[in-house]
Image (cartoon, rainbow over all chains, first blue to last red; front, side, top):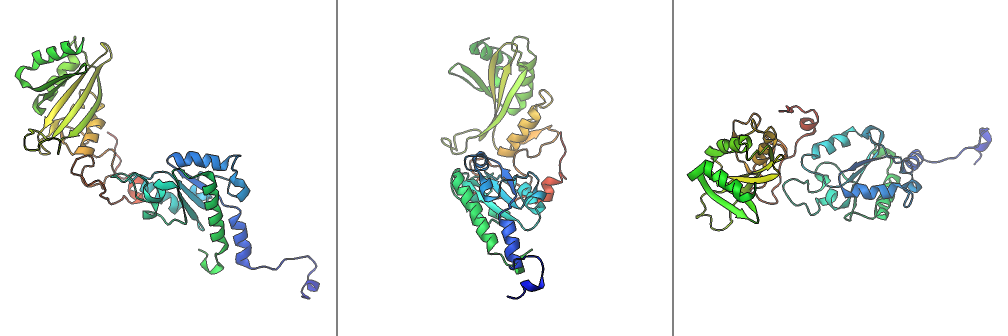
Length: 159
Length: 176
């Protein structure tokens, strides 16, 4: 009140973390790490019928250095585990991880010598998506969960 | 040649060195001891009538717990699947491996593909191949302990994972 009279241009007062979180949550750049049939389901998520661009996360990057949302879709074998860790480490902060489907979340029915029993043994996970494979709506639901999580972040938590 | 003729010709060559022979659903196979393997496979490849020019696959079998363990004379078998592209016929050779202390002679110099096939049998069953140039694991990661397809390997055993640098930087990578 009264501040407007001191500046010539119109302006909007807000909090710094709020405006930055608003920018981040509607411009997620996913990096698909697709190793199995869940990655085929992801094609449905990005294309016209389900259209993840309605939620601002359609610009798929195949370089981890240009992405901030890692989508792990499919079975991760023990031999592949260090590759996934390396890709996660290459992503710049801030970054979020969605574990899509039973295999990535828990190993699925591959309870054997060669499969990692859930990618949270290797990297931190923000949202787990159940299903084998999950419906595209579930993936969109996970992206909305990520957006809600970004919304709750405070400037003090920024890395 | 049909399967009976192949079996007869192989038995004629090997004589009493055949441990067992099979003719089941028109598929012939024999079992021999490891020391006769190279002789036999060289014969199968170079004999004009047989002409097995392609080693299709090498696999392993672990018979632990299959029937009575005390009665069986050998625990493992290494199985060689042979095919002749010129004659269009097949044959199967099984090598009896008493236990893990017995090594099988490598045949990678007869067919180069045996190099990787034998590495797979080593990786999965822990059967050693003498004369192999590069007997390292091929499917499991280098830090893997044990051999996954043995019947006494615990089905839900967890292994130490490789660190990123070990696989990304390819420090141990040497292609044979």
